[in-house]
Length: 361
Image (cartoon, rainbow, N blue to C red; front, side, top):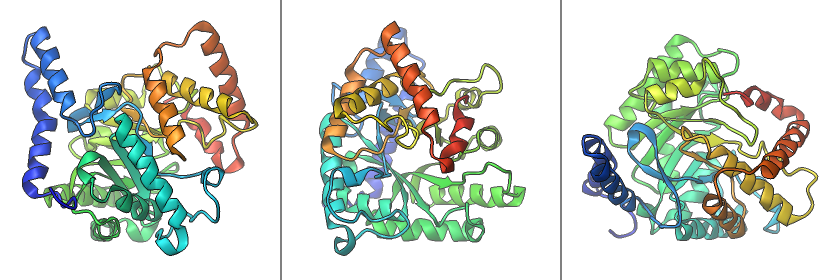
């Protein structure tokens, strides 16, 4: 393959590999384990020291920690102005950022992290160049905030498909692995007709071969649960907040629907908009809190992967280390993370108070 223009044949071959696990379900236990191990090794950027989790019905094997597109806190590691998320990043306005993103993606690939979620105009324009020449080494999640259903003019299938085309051109890619809409509903403002338009856009994009899998990200647990239950064929992947202190509801949990319909899940905001670190001055302590949080989150097998925004290759290494550390927290670590979690909630900025709604999922 040259210059990462994935051909239709490559596209179908990769999809066949992802689906191979279905056939393994009918094998004897030992045979199934061997088939699963062989299948996992075929995933993108496989590294034996990384854990990979099956992303629900997509059949993709995704690194247990993946890369979130946001770059908050980037001013800690690069000099100069850091472009915002609403407009394109170019060499003229963000050369240092583009260099940083390529370095971070490179380190991700080296440690076996194989999924990046680009969900804004800026992120799409930054991660496209970062993946140039190696598009087949990482799975790409895609959205195009602020041109998304959070704004009324982007609640028709026609408008949404146009934004998909726009974003693909901006990133310089021929397809995306996961096309998901940003529809952060917390007040039920979407009409039934608007939801049908969103679903139609996702379904058509997949049938046209512009994406392999589809889904939604949302800040509204009940609304997201409804989508999974009502449109299981289209809601193949969902993204939602899952923090260092999130817990599964004993009844009426979103995870009930996720498990029933075999949906891949990505946990956003694992560090609660960096509130987990607010007031912590020592980098070693920040790193430790981050690892404790990831280890805690990964104890929920229904989470495919948390997707923290990683500002530097060192932060990538810290996440890879978290995956390798003992999954179960001991009593002292549990108490330490619980105390940090209480500080996290207390440190939430006013515009993130809504995140408290996701303490129980």
